[in-house]
Image (cartoon, rainbow, N blue to C red; front, side, top):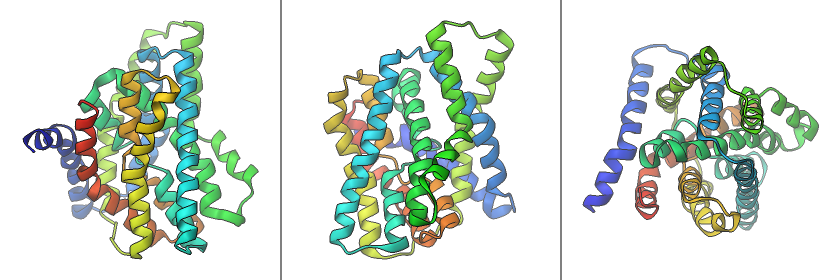
Length: 303
């Protein structure tokens, strides 16, 4: 028990302290989370992705395997949630909300700091790649799920072209494949901006959770929470060894897989009317419960 408490205090409690500061700031001011979110989305996060991938020197084969597993696990979670949801007779916008919160995790402003604290810079490179692909899936497959029959697949895929993190990923891969040396001014500027990403993400998490309200239906909330916090990391433990990834990658991706529902899903649910009150409740509840599942998971992974 003492070991689990130490793991929580060293790896998870700092996250909640910083997010708590963001929540306190939201209560005391009229700060708009969207402004900070856009700075992180368009500047800090792309620079973080570029810096981490170029510094970690991931092999092209490893990059491909991480991308393949990320897509595989997302689809597998979706299929499992779909089957259970049908057995529970869920449908309509509520079912879309359940799928969103089950399939897409908070691998950015929660997952990246935990991986950094627990497993260090090397594992963070793999975690950042997982984060980029997860965001890309959220903005494509997630939009399709949220809108269901109201938007075409081609229009949803068009959103991928607008993701700055995708361009950061492509540029980083170009640097890795060509061995191009980044000019010192650009390297230092991107590192400074990237370093601002993680603390900003945590403050943003607190700002966004301030508006969360734990309301909703018991069965859908239980399904989304179970798939997100229990089934997802279990699938990672079972299937990741089949992809031939090194131990730091397995540690990083398994922890990322166990993260609570992505805050981004609340935006999609609001935009496409997929039960935003339920989605917000699921995000809040899974975030609140996550230390209970992440702490023993960290112990299992040897943090």
